[in-house]
Image 1 (cartoon, helix red, strand yellow):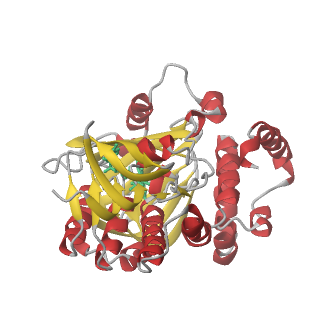
Image 2 (tube, rainbow, N blue to C red):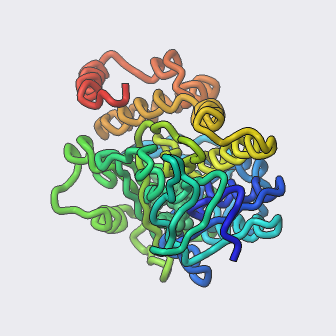
Amino acid sequence: MNNRYDVVIAGAGPAGAQCARDLAARGYDVVVLETESEDEFPRQSNKSTAGTFPSMMAAFGIPDDVVMQYTDSVVLESPTDHFVREQPGAVLEFADFKRYLVADGREDGAEYRFDARVTAPIMENGEIVGVTYNGDQEVYGEIVVDATGPAAPLAKKLDVVDLEHENHAIGIEYEFEGIDVDRPGFADLHDAMMLRLDHELAPGGYSWIFHTGEDTAKVGLCYIRNEQYHQYGRESYSIDDYLDHWVDTDPRLQDATRLEGKMHRGSAHIQMPGQLYTDRFMAIGDTVPTVDPLWGEGIHKCMKSGRMAAATADSCLKHGNVEPTAENLEVYETLWHRDVAPNVRARLLMTKLLYLAPDERYDRLMADLNRLDDDTLARANKGNPAAIAKLLHVDDLPLLARFAKQELTFGDLL
Ligand SMILES: Cc1cc2nc3c(=O)[nH]c(=O)nc-3n(C[C@H](O)[C@H](O)[C@H](O)COP(=O)(O)OP(=O)(O)OC[C@H]3O[C@@H](n4cnc5c(N)ncnc54)[C@H](O)[C@@H]3O)c2cc1C
């Protein structure tokens, strides 16, 4: 078996598999090491609701076959109100999508090794030159990429990332049938992706219903076990209990039943990224982490990070004499902050403010969203301070004061 490659990638998620697709298309020898077995792939890593948008599908040539349901709108809900925004989207069958990325990369020559759990970097003169997997197997590359999501075995050992426990968000979801998709008193959820702000259901986080056709949908929730969680959460509740509680109390779900084997569970970190690279090494996707902190859109962002890492590797490898030193890989970090996750600091702060607000404030937010024009909302979503100010009121001062006080404690974000 070949044991030397241009690029070695750990992890066949959206980030790693996309990075491999781009490198293989450029003619590089690339191998992806994936811990799961090929027969069942993806099993534990089949974790995503996989709501995405046409921009991702077009940019990465994703075929219709992996789409469960095309959607027309995004709905935001508070405990008693909602806001509807017309916006085309797609809910993917995440397992089919992951398998497609692997198959497509292989067609261009990317090599995949399944049942290959990466454990540690192989170091020479202080630089990573390869990885060990399954204990005693070795593979070498000019450049190594960690795309294992929150596991990050290489990035952690190289001190490139510091994924902090207090920033660890957990999510769970089931696919259901028998849902009342157009219940009087609620928004019509046909062909919609709905996100709900309601601490009773997801303390310090949010819950969702993504329509997947007829009376079926993906129903889930996520939160970080942080200050907000402790303020609004119930001591004895697990994340499964919260989902049960929602199913028991929401009239839209009263006749809903879970589809067998259709449970997805996963996690990500919601924090500022670290350095992202070092000599001969880049961290991509949720190893960084790259998922958008506000609404959890990770697929598109993680694939973009894979693409930027591939472009950076290409810029070194295509000139045989440009060593992939940290200095020469620095462009990846620049591209990440410019094109993958611009304004990440502002979005993290918005996230903290949003999830700190009480339920009543969410109802008022829906009224504000319905009042403001699309342009202002788009600018607010990108972190524009003037546009965000239009969503704030005089009686938000105590909330802002609490937020400012917390931020002094969370000084790492500022
Ligand atoms: C419940 C939930 C719902 C979500 N919903 C959405 C959504 O609707 N839309 C959206 O855009 N995003 C969503 N996300 C986020 C999105 O799924 C992630 O951001 C994205 O999957 C991250 O991609 P990645 O390639 O970086 O990592 P991952 O998807 O985590 O992939 C990592 C891969 O590495 C493998 N691996 C792990 N450890 C090792 C190891 N030691 N050696 C080798 N391989 C290893 C794993 O098996 C996996 O295949 C959701 C996430 C969760 C948890």
